[in-house]
Image (cartoon, rainbow, N blue to C red; front, side):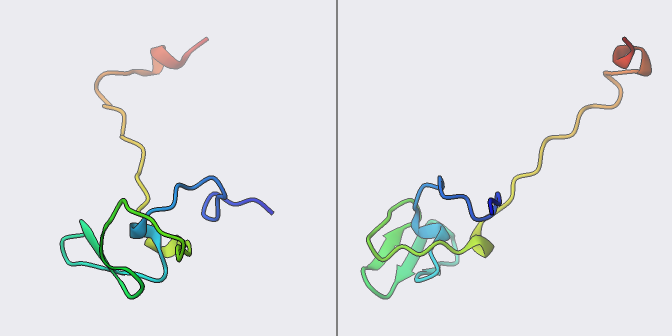
Length: 73
């Protein structure tokens, strides 16, 4: 079963790790195994936590730029 939340192709990063605790400024992660780590670092103790993932929404199209005629065939 494939899901976009449990993607096997995700790049390991400490910001998504279930072992570490995110810092207040979100640039560092407090890891019980390795200490203070940068959010983009990774180590062998990495375990992916899908709840730590921030979902980026698609940008909205400006409504004044397009009209119904633009979507006709």
